[in-house]
Image: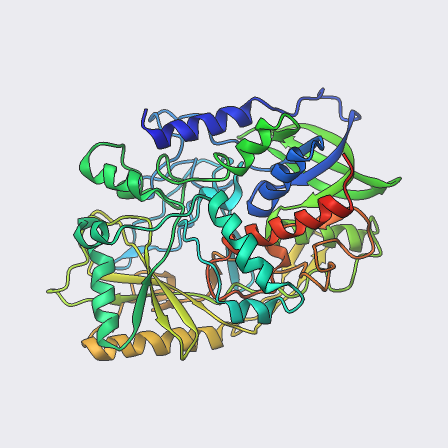
Amino acid sequence: MNNFSRRRFLGVTALAAGTFVTGRAGASTQHVPAVVVGSGYGAAVAALRLGEAGVRTLVLEMGQRWDRPGPDGKVFCGMLDPDRRSMWFKNRTEAPVNGVLFLDLANRPIQRYAGVLDRVNFPNMGVYVGRGVGGGSLVNGGMAVVPDRDYFTRQFPTVDADEMYTRFFPLANRMLRVNNIPGAYFEASDYYRYSRLSRTLAGRAGFDTAFVPNVYSFEHMAAEERGEAPKSALGTEVIYGNNHGKFTLDQGYLAEAANTGHVTVAALHQVTRIRRNNAGYALTVREITPDGALVAEKHVTCDHLFLGAGSLGSTELLLRARDSGDLPDLAAEVGEGWGPNGNVMTARNNHLWHPTGFRQSAIPTLAISDPGRHVFAEVAPVPAGIETYVSMYLAITRSEERAKFVYDPSTDKAVLQWRQGQSAESLAAAKGTFDRINDANGTTYRYDVFGGGKAFADDFCYHPLGGAVLGKATDDHGRVKGYPNLYVTDGALVPGSLGVNPFVTITALAERNLATILTEDVHP
């Protein structure tokens, strides 16, 4: 067992040691001092810092614990051979890229199951989220980017930027084990030919590129290429989970939280209702099997409640509580300020003398910068196992467009009111960047990669942000207005746009907020 696989094994073993066990009786109630809903970046920070403070804490995660190999001996399935492990209770996979030559090569029918990736579909916008102990860390590309300081200050005018950039961003990077690809390895690897080509073509258009840090171990990746470690990033694994190489929250924050002896993680437990209970909160929780069968409805009470179920999950819980009358005094700003972080994907067609390589690392490491249009475009892989001549990009743009969630009592769901055309500004910015690259190289767009024969995809996002914005729905440290000891600690706090991948910011902001909350609010 190599060092990285050993760390993953030890991490999930620590988590498995603490399991939320109660009887099947629906009326049973458990009280804990603190509950954390969700297990993504902000939730994981809350769990660890509460555990270190000696606060007995229960983490409730609706997805499953990804620690058991399937029939193929792997915990996660690959992108090119998805099975039921891939998607959260879908009949068919819903990968962002449909295929090439107008053939849907990426998607196929699957058995409904508690898979690791979900696409939540709203009118005009689909949102990708991770499902499992570790949340989005299980399924993202691992690009660990600290935002431009000026733009961060604009988005968070009441947050001390000096403190964030000298203390909390460095802390988040250390905890997440962020590392950088060695330049010599990048230049020599066959698996990054596609990135080097995009760098060359962008340079002809006058654009700079920059390496982007990652939580994937580049030491492990180099060993993969040498044949000394099992292939993960170099074996077309990323959006449905990495079996090796990537440092996810279940190995880091959550494992350390469990090792404090004060934190228990309950997988396949979904919180459906929040109410006041004396000085604290009462939660209704559904436990299910991986096949979706109801095991039990449970009831948990707590003194301190931390919502870390992500922009969609935390916002929905608050909206349901407000509009159903369970927490009627929640602020009117709950549900507002949502944005897709300006996400736009596009694909270009390269000349026959510019192959991208049939072997491609699934972990991106390079981004194109267009400061004039405020476009940060990640060079994305197309690890199809064949030569496609496709260069693909995820453009992150700065957009002021916002939407809100509203509660629909007929479905008991929060519905996103994102209007068709709201991505027009982001789309125009991305198109301006890539029109210039095409013009400089005599190339064109590809129209066979995304659905509907279009060159740009602006109807889905990887970076949902907002819904309970810091300083509006909450105070300046994530305390929910009107309700003591109720907190939001995830991407719902971020006002719709960061200009870069958000998970390092979510982690650092949670560290900053918990440092104050533990000092002022929580008494073990």
